[in-house]
Length: 353
Ligand code: SAH
Ligand code: SF4
Image (cartoon, rainbow, N blue to C red; front, side, top):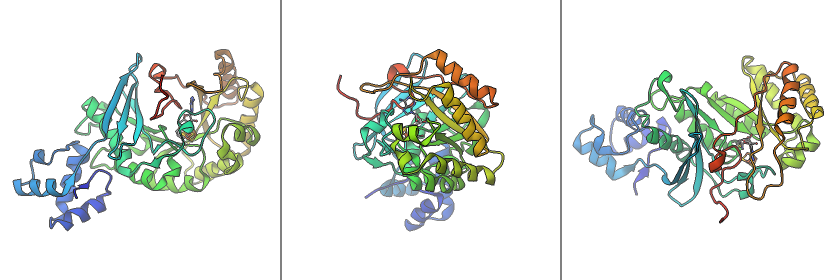
C-alpha cells in the first residue's frame, strides 16, 4: 500500500525515508518539495535521481482532497467543498482583503458542540480530520491562487489562517497541533504563528495545551455575558462554564503578557444584544483583568434557524458601549453570504432545495 505523506511530521517523514533505505537529507528535500514548492508529482522532483523518483512513487503519495464544488461570491470570497479519500466532505473559505487574505480551515466533519445558532452544529459530528486533511485544505487554496513556491511574507495573498471553519479544533487537539506545526514550519508553507488565529467554543482543558504547543493566537466564542444565557445558546457551557473559560484565558495571559485575546460575540436580536448585556460583558473583562479585543459578529442566518440578526442600530449601540469602556469592538463584515460562506454557515451536507 502506498502511504500518504501530507500530514507527517518532519520526524515521521524522516523515518519513512529511512525505512526505504534513503538518507535523512532526502527527507529534508522531500519536505521542501511538498510544502515549499507544493509539488505533488515525484517525477518533477528534479534533484532526485530517476531511480529515487521511481522508488518514492512506488511507496508514497502526495494527495490533495478532491474539489467537489467551488463558488465565488460577488465580494470575491471563495468557497470550496472538498472531499477526502473516504468520501467525507468539508467546506473551506478564502476571504480576500486588499493585499492579503485569510483562509478559513475546518478541523472536523460536522461538530459535536451543537451551538444553537450554528449551521455546522446542526450537522452532528461525523469524524475528526487528520493532520494531513487539515493541512491539505490550505494547500488547495494555494493551488487555486498559484501561490507556490511559498512567497515572502510581503507578497502573500493567502497571508493568514483562521481555524474557524467546520468543527471545534479543541475537540481534535492532536491533529490540530500537528497540522498547525506543519503550516508554520519555516522550511515549507511558513505561515507565521502570529498570523494564525484559532477559535474555540471554550474546551477548557485543552486551551493551554494547544496554545503552548503551537503559539498561535486565541479567539474565544463568548456570545453571552453570563452563564445562564450562554448555556441557553451554547450547551457546552454546562460542561465548561463561562467563569472557567475566562480563568483559562487569564492563565494564558499571565504567562504571555503581550497577547490580546479576541472575544467573538454574535449579536442575536432580543437575545444577547441589549445595552445591559454590553455592561455585563465589560464587568466580566474587568473582573478577570483580561486584555481583550471584541469581534462583534452579525448573525448569519441559514435555512431552518430560529434566530434573527440584531438590527444595525442595535449593533452600533452595543459596539459603542464597549468602545466607551476602552475596548476595540469592530463589527465583522459578513463575507460571502450569497454563497453561504460566512461564519457559521458552513456545512457539508446541505438540505435539498
Ligand atoms: N468551533 C469554533 C470555531 C468554528 S465557528 C468556535 O465555535 O469558536 C467560528 C465562529 O463562527 C465562532 O465564533 C462561531 O460562534 C461563529 N458562528 C457560528 N454560527 C454563526 C452564525 N450563524 N453566524 C455568525 N457566526 C456564527
Ligand atoms: Fe461547533 Fe463552533 Fe459551530 Fe459551536 S459555533 S457548533 S463549536 S463549529
